[in-house]
Image (cartoon, rainbow, N blue to C red; front, top):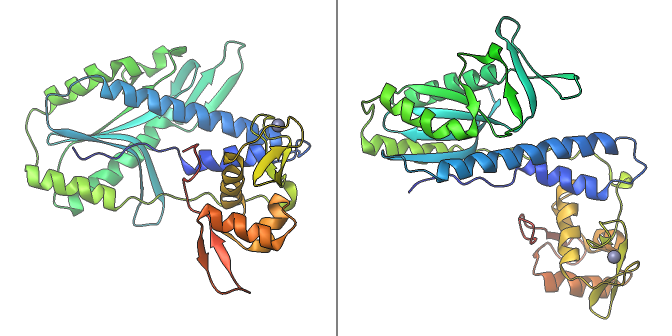
Length: 321
Ligand SMILES: [Zn+2]
């Protein structure tokens, strides 16, 4: 069955690497920590919703497109958490993992939550976000010769969230309501709006149009900890290369994967290209000859001749995918 699986977002990968590498005294570190918590909570919530969707049988032909990211004709991105696409309708799901009492003032497009301690925080209007995706999807489908109802809903994945009466009548519910909501849309739209051939073709076109944006590298190398960092010491201690292995200078542990993690951080935070000199400077290996051996053992793609040679660090090659 055609589907687009959810993968860990680039922004989450990038922020994890940044928090791992940023100097403890950096004044922006608390902001990045807070951003990381939000990104992790968001990703966890999306996975929770995916499990709920996978848990029940939809008795009609359909597929799921998770974390679909497409540019509109104006060059702006549409990041859609999940799509349920069927012959009868297309459903856009905006997934929110937030807790507290959720309130809405539609006239002011103000969506807020009140925490247990009484503090209030505003969020961007999720109905407006979903409506923006809906009009985009309608236009895109129309340009492919398909006219089908496009619905949307906001899915709350945190069971501690309380939906205020001001949300009554709006398409927002806890994740456990997904099953009933999808069944409701099949009752509301009993007729197929396209042929199976057009349906399959549209699914492939959505996937072909996928455009994952890469976060801009915003922090200079001098604000980051260099070195192969020890995972056991929560990335606070540097490891040294001795007798063909990496050993922690603090706890003494050996770890071969730590080098891959370090190079993945380099790719995310600095560049996907690294020269022998940059590699030595980042990892603390002194000898050019040893660095060259370590790099070739990693099997990285080499580009250029001796003087201008650099290596390409591939995506997703660490254990932490
Ligand atoms: Zn250690």
